Image (tube, rainbow, N blue to C red; front, side):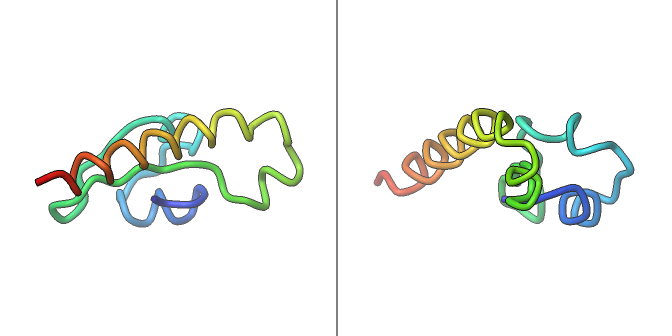
Length: 69
């Protein structure tokens, strides 16, 4: 999980805004990377919590799928 614009843009080597990156899955060094909003952004914009919650549910599903034998 990349938390925020700077982390996502640095890891993905892009200048796309976090609003376009979040909610998508990217391949990063053999792993799945999911960008989402930084926690400080959520303090200023509480309605965005719903979007981050959807991202976290996606992360959970990926982790559970990898844990199955």
